Image (cartoon, rainbow over all chains, first blue to last red; front, side, top):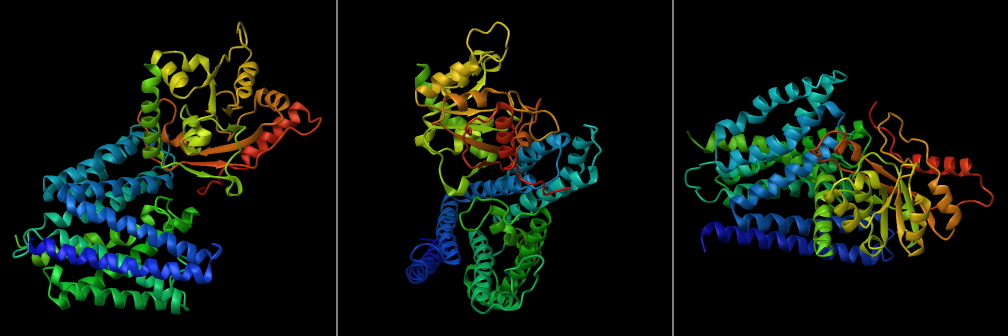
Amino acid sequence: MSSTQFDMMVLVLGVCGILLVASFVGYVLERRLSPDGSNSVIENLNARINAWWVMAILIAMAFVAGRIGVLLLFGFCSFAALREFVTLTNTRRADHWALATAFFVVLPLQYVLLWIENYEIFSVFIPVYAFLLMPIISAVRGDTQHFLVRIAEVQWALMICVFCASHVPALLTLHIPGYAGRNVLLIAFLVIVVQLSDVLQYIWGKMIGRTKIAPRLSPSKTVEGFLGGVACASLVGAGLWWITPFSPLQAGAMAFLITLMGFFGGLVMSAIKRDRGVKDWGHLIDGHGGLIDRLDSVVFSAPIFFHLTRYFWSPG
Amino acid sequence: MKSLIAKPVAVVVLLFARAITAVRPFWHEGRLPRRRSIFFANHSSHGDFILIWAVLPPRLRRRVRPVAGADYWLKSRLRSFIGRDVFNGVLIDRNRDGRTMDPVESMGEAMKEGSSLILFPEGTRNQSDASLQPFKSGLFHLAALHPDFELVPVWIANLNRVMPKGEFVPIPLICTVTFGEPMHLADGEEKDMFLERAREALLALAPKKAVE
């Protein structure tokens, strides 16, 4: 067994252990507080834990399948996220071909560029080419009503759901000296730290949360939850230095940065939901809402994590 | 032979519809519909009945037949295969002149055999700006003839954006199917009053426009 496989095994066992504890706690809480299924917080908690099992297993399977598995998993995430996002936009019939292009040309191409490891085009394909092409397609249909709003929404949807999300699997393309063959662990580091931060903020908030941090955007987020969650997740990140090319201190700083980005990503995406009058982005994941509800923090942290790692650890 | 490939085709259509729309049902008070129901829904796309069919539990799905226009579904061999063999549609002649079978009669036959129906009382796809067009009278006659059937209003949201008329590439968007409270024809209720009541019940299920 290679050291990468061994480290991955340790991570999988660790995650399984945490989920087992969570399932056990959820079971005890349900027996004590909600034996007839009437306590919605407990019911939602258990639905979330069950969904976590499914998500963890899916990610583990993608890792086992290798590069193609990771690309397919995040390609699907991009597709489902884009589907949720575009549902809430003001697009009109005149945008039909632009949207078809976004779903069936731009999205697959972005992941093909990762597959062939063409970073030069990957990094500008959506911000430059799609950015210019999509409004052209919409414009030739001649419908000018809310034109700027419509093209801006489609571009934003592509940036968030495809461009930013694709920076998670893009970690596989980095060439870091002394880290060859271990890149998949960088994805594990990012996903574990960001998601753990979300979970810890939720737990800290539920336990000691008093002061609302952004009542108009997200009534469930509290200062106590934010501080506790970010601090704990950063510590866990530092403790995971052995799966990264970073020193413990660097790993902690990276974890701190991506949990911050994740937190603010959640706020931004909440602002969009409030504006559109919905509670969740969709219903793909039982107990969590839509895929974007779970992916929002990863999407905001992934590009920053990718670029910092590339800039400082991947020479040339 | 036809029936042999009809089942796999139905599964493929179902998977495709789910991949594009991630369709989700909202049941009235969380209760599944009864075995004998007429589902009457808004109509904006040829795929409307597929979404209702897709969200029904398999036990109900086996016994539900969509009502559709013969002029559209018998036009080509592929359409007739999908409309008749795959979805077991009750194909009615919408052209008043020179039809040999009364639509209410065909639908009544299917109900007597124990089938539920999916019905679009607007008659044709709604291309107008209005949320809902006036209802045709078929629903009233069926309600009068078969009081044991529950009439369930069903609102299909967003499918018109997935594939507007004249386009052939569907855009993936999330669709919902909302089931309303089952209703019956009241004693001595007049046709126009009943149709208006049914129309209001369906319209009440339409999501409020979040934007603008």
